[in-house]
Image (cartoon, rainbow, N blue to C red; front, side, top):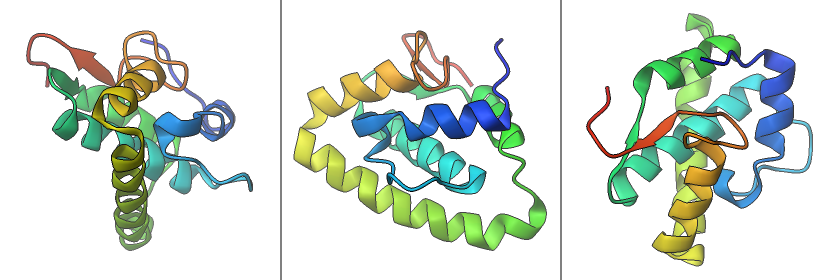
Length: 124
C-alpha cells in the first residue's frame, strides 16, 4: 500500500482533471482535496457498474489530509458541494466516459490515488 503525503495529495488531486470533476485552478486545501476525492469515489461506486470503494484506502487518504474532528461540519458542506459538482460532470460526460476517468484516477492503477476504487469481487 502506497501512502500519500499531504503535499503529494494536494498536488495529485489538483491534477486529477475531469475525473475529479474539475478541481479548481486555485490551490486547494487538503480538506478540499479530500472532499473531491471522496465525492468522486463514492459517486463512482453508485454510478459505475462493478466499481466499489475500498473504505480502508479512502480512510488512509482522509488521514493523509489530516481531517480532524473540528473540521467535520466544514467537511460535510464541502462534500455536499463537491458531490453536486461531480454529479453535474457525470451528467455532462456520460456514465461510460466519466466512470472510465474515475477509474483511471482512483482505480488500481490510479493516476491520483491508487486503489481507492476496485472492480470485481466485493471489497470493504
